[in-house]
Amino acid sequence: MNRLDFTPYRRTTVGFDRLFDLLENQVRNGGDNYPPFNIERRDEDAYRITLAVAGFRSSQDLDITAQQNLLVVQGRKRDEDAAGEMLHVGIANRGFERKFELADFVRVENADLADGLLVIDLVREVPDAMKPKKIAIGGQKLEIVHSDDERKDDSEAA
Image 1 (cartoon, rainbow, N blue to C red):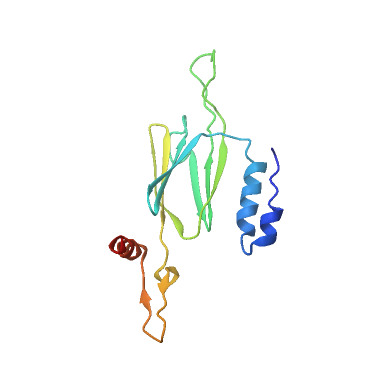
Image 2: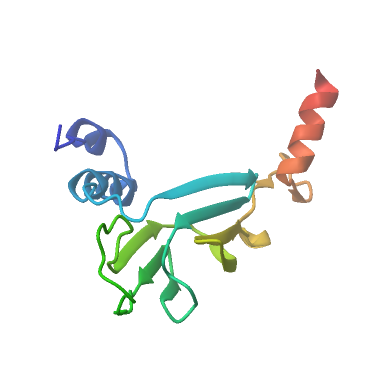
């Protein structure tokens, strides 16, 4: 299945065009699996991407660019002359470009390269102005409700 048809969903939703476009692009461009990677959720608002970048030794070989809603990791493999004749080449010796679409308010917190693994830590920081607010009925004062407060209220009610 190389094509997804989101037409029925596009007709009944508003403002989700970007999401549907992302899903369709993933199916279209999903052929290259190099380098392999993991995406881990470490906390409610913390994520980690780990890429297996064997043969890339330093930050000079790798480039990480964070733009709004896009993280691009590029690897440039240096040409090296082997000391002897290569009988088998099993380690990929090529450059790459891997793109990750990021949700709103997700930023790169840290990146580290060790033991052939590039680890990129991401954090979602929603500004206070964008957090949900509880609206009181009857002209009462606005009360800001954070997600932790909602969980406490739910557990007390039970």
